[in-house]
Structures are given as structure tokens and as C-alpha cells.
View (cartoon, one colour):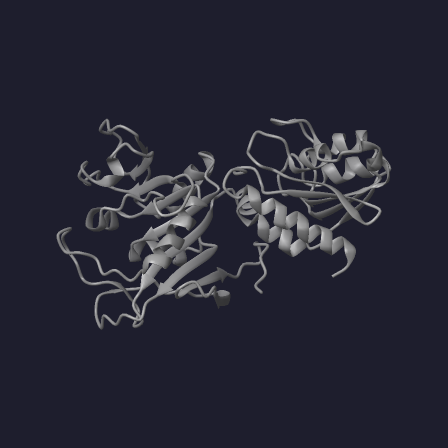
Length: 355
């Protein structure tokens, strides 16, 4: 690892501190180096607040050093006025002579413009240091901006012989529990890191999930359920008003339920494209799909998924509801957290590598 890669790795490390609050903005880290020493660091803490470059520059005690420093940034500095002024303009005004960038920003208002502005000001700009790692860091932001849909994560638990539940027809039949305390905690961590979580009607009715974050610090995501005929009973936890819930339905007349919104879709064909389009329109960058089997399989079959987390239990059921079948995956690995496998879908349009 050379010097530029070393400092870019630190940018990535810093950026991850914004995982829970930067969205819908990307996670970005910045490091300022002078004479081989780090003199400033920063990351984008919260959407609407100062960007990583601003925080890094503010942390420098002697600003005269900036005129002979290099600033490392994991994502291209912005060049437009949004909630904050352009970071490219700030870098230019401080006289920083060299900028090293991890990857180009796919956001249409930036996408190369920040780099061009810096170069036109006579600044030496290096692009593509640890590019794959920087793209991976903001894969959700990138999918949202390049494909105009949320980054979709599929999640389920299954028996060792490939079933996700026993055959149940009524809510009084308890579901099979595959998770242990540790893997359950990881599920809640995952929920805290997404914008929305989706289940189908059968899962909502039989399992009565609350879909909230309880075993990990963080905010609960938007709860989303598909209920074509609005037949789900209103005593379910999804309708408790504690957290917002969005219901996709074929109906056009909605009941009034506190904290619940409704959206009408055309169920005469696949609803997934319109469902994802609506969530994107609402600012949802990441969607966790927790079930059931039919809903999960529809995302797989139609190609609307980016990542899958499969918890494989040692339990043997012998019969039941078959687990979804994955295909076209480029890699699979175990995180050694309980028995959860993380699987990435291979797609030429996605900027992801597996290590």
C-alpha cells in the first residue's frame, strides 16, 4: 500500500462514522496531510450539515499549512450549491495544491464537475485511489442515483434443509424460530442501517412483526407492507402508530389510521418496478425485504436485488415453506456472525467487488 492508498484508507474509515446519519447523502471522509503528517481529519456527520472537506479543514490548527498540503477525499468534492456551499470552491479558496479523490460522484449535479473545477484552478487532482473500496462504501447512494431505485437487501432465515417456516395458515400457529440472541441483534443492526423495511401480507398477518429497532441503537426504518385488498386487521403492530407505515394496495379508498399512508398500485402486472419507483421518489435509498418466501422470490426472479443475508440454522424441518432460490451470484462468504451468509448479486451495472 503506497502513501496515497494509506491516507485514502483512513478516509474510508472516517466516512463510516456517518453510516447512521449521513443518508440520503453519501458517507464521505477527508484527510489533510502536510510533510507526511496528518494535520486535519473530518467526515460527513449528518445530512444538511458540513461536508467532510469542511470538517477536515476546520480541524487544521495552522491554516497556513494548507498551501503546501494534500487533501484526500473518498468521494469527489461537490461543485454545486445545495444545503451547503461547494466544497470544491472551499478547497480552491484555501490554496490547497493537491487533491486525491477515491471515486467520481455519480450524482448528476456533481459527476466530474468538481474535479474539472479543481483542475481549472490549477490544482493537481488524482482520481481513482482505492476506487473499488470507495464505491463499495456508498453502494446504496450509487444505486439510488444511477438506477433510480433503492438498494435492495433480501433477508431470511432458513433450516439446514432449506425451509423458512412450517406450513401455517393462522396467526395462532407460532413461527419456527431459527435465530439466536446474537443473530437477532444483527438483524436489528441491519434494520437501523436501512431507510425502509418491507414484508408481504402473509408475513404481516401470521407473524405480526413490529419491524422496529429494539436490540440495537438507531432509528427504526419506514415500515412497508403489501396489502392488495386492505384486508389486514388494524390491530396488527404495523398499524400501532409508533412508527410510520406505508401500505401498497390496489384499492383507491383508504381507511384513516394514525401513522399510516397508502399508495395505490396496478396489480394487473408486477408491482415491483412501481413500488421501487415510489420508494425512490420518497427518498428511500435502501430497502430491506424480510419476507415472505413469495415476495423474496419475486425480487430475485425480476432481478431487483443487490445483496442477500441468509441465516442458515442447524434445525431440520423436513417439510414446510421452501426458502427462496438464489441464482447469478458472484460470490458468497460467511461473516462468522452466527451462521449468516452475505451474498452479492453479480451485475455489470453495479460497482461491487467481492473479497
